[in-house]
Length: 491
Image (cartoon, rainbow, N blue to C red; front, side, top):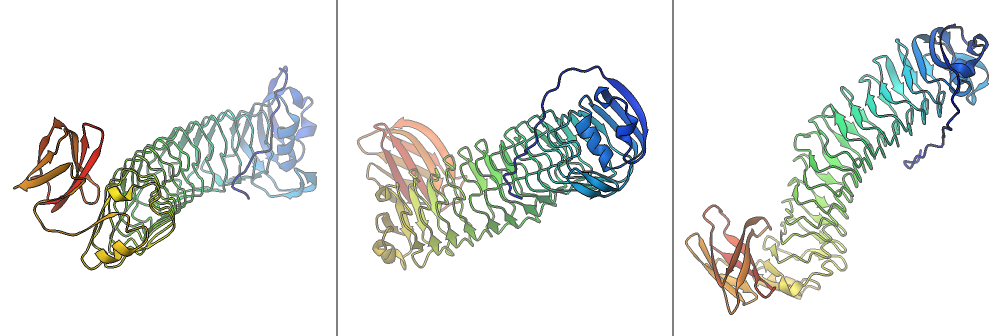
């Protein structure tokens, strides 16, 4: 089935009726004969045995029915004239579509073992749902598009197919206690869903399981999680993603957290080696990100549009930065690992805050795609290269436009531009401006980690670096005339 499932069942409002409550002992296929005026029944308690024909009769021929008690009913198999499009229905199963679009708002389920068929209550008027332990399986879209459904408690022993609660716009609270798998699109487009409890036992979160759940700001990821599907939380309201404890997780599906515009910080576990395409695409509030060192590559569009991300750490084993992977990132510095071989099309397009790239670990120039640094003023970016590779960088297309410098152990400075200069006196870093005033100073590691951010309003500044062990630092000064000056200096 297409993941863009749309419920095609509609409920039409009915005029008010004079209604009654009935207790009925039923035999298979006899409900329609037993009730003298089914249109007047609002509450129905069935005992005895019923089959598929009785369920379809309740769902389609009892317009006033609001409350159904099936706790004392046995569901018999059916074979006969077609009902619900079929001539044969199994025992112990609420048939596919039996109450679809019906006005039923409350149901008490059978006490024994039973299954719920596909679309069984789709677009019905159920308001709350607590599935009993006797449920063995719940079919595709069984409760999809129920406009009044607000609270759901699932049965831990049941198996669930996809889209079960797809597009339930009032669904606000879900209890997953004991449930280990949420299949594809199960809660997708449940825009009011704000609370999901007991989710830490989940082993599988399927494709699009919580897609477009805009009210969902937090989620508990547990140690047993081993599968996180594509688009699982795409366009959700998550503020934080903490997968640090999910040590069984080795890969994360494509676009799993894309378009999460409120997401501010995320942690992937050390066990993850593969991150799907567009994993954090269009997450403009993402400012803090922890990725595992074993990650083999930054996938296409992985961090595209992460315009608040000021620091990006490229793991020691990273060999590929995919297409547009860092497009628009606010990272100031990048340290390229020795394993890096390819930076793909547009990977660093629009990284206008970039001031330095440390390529000193590389013995060879990585292969580049097209327009890798589009929109970056490369002449203002310092690229540090090893002695063995510096000439190759200076000769390579797209690389040669950087301000390429060799590595140094000199205690003084390499300044770009010449408006500032500096030196170390022990652990004290002294910075001076020539003919202007320093309005603010930021101190970074070579990998782009911000260590200090101070307002100055003077032509000189002193920064204590005794709390830091780095040998080389990057200083970015905002000058009083609005210019920015960058200084790389070794202690």
